[in-house]
Length: 302
Image 1 (cartoon, rainbow, N blue to C red):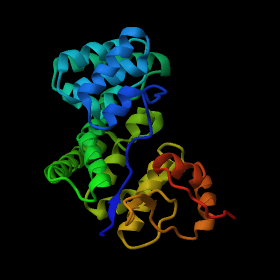
Image 2: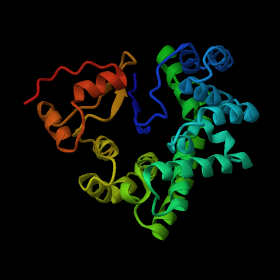
Image 3: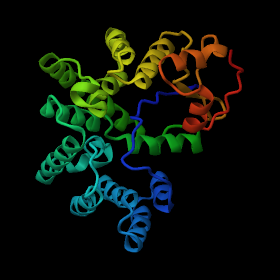
């Protein structure tokens, strides 16, 4: 069986300390109507459960039921001061609505009140929009991944979605380069951690390897200077190596084996991988792989 490559480039953030419940499980299985019903049952019992209310809003948004999505989203964000919702691809369907501009404005105001003013607030919003659009269709692709795990082949509806994903990525990349030319490379100190990761995700999604190679020095520099994500740097560095037939350094790229189980691609000097990861502030590979893909890493470290 041909190996299926999976590049994990999702953001490592969440709005709240989310815990799985019945609604989350049903949603992850693609059973959105049932998930909404489960979320609403919890909401009726405990309307102060922000995790559940936010997930209810997301489920409605995925179904393009905008009025319900906005209603529950406003409830969920009432006491939230983060920018995560502005980058959450689950809410992408809401961005064409005027009510979304209100959400953007209020969240940015609350974020700055808590964390201090950002240097370029308009730049922040544009970068967050790129993150959201970059990860649009990820829910549908997750459903295709689950189909492959069950059937051993991709579903027929995967191919048009994958093509649309590529087209979105190319358009996002062009917008990203224009924004960087106008505003400079985004850093943690200028736009905050979430917005600063926007170029990294878009670069990693690009189909042209030369793009990742071109920007890798800047991404590495930002990591070393603590002005950018070292996690995303490691993913991009490993992706370049894997795509060019070399062994990865940090263990961040995986593929499906013949048993349709995820495992990491071969790693250079695997007994020293934790030493390399520690140098840029990453957790031991054993912990990362267990959490991300439920894989048991057993190579002793030196």
